[in-house]
Image 1 (cartoon, one colour):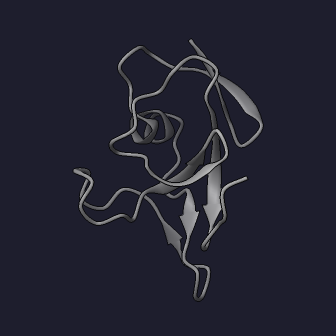
Image 2 (cartoon, rainbow, N blue to C red):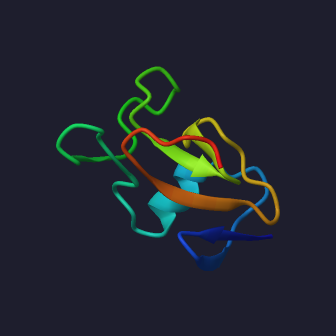
Length: 85
């Protein structure tokens, strides 16, 4: 299946999480903190720490480690606190 990651179309496997895809693409961070812009990625991997937040299909604060990909998803890096589009 095809998904878009920060404007780039990539192949994903059925049942793959957003975090799994991003790590497979060599990404170690895909969010920056609201204060200081520090990079963040997966920390706990079980949805507790909220460090792996991304924007999926215009919805911010999606936990990348918990969200299964669907064909056509649009995944974007989240910069600080974002409002839904």
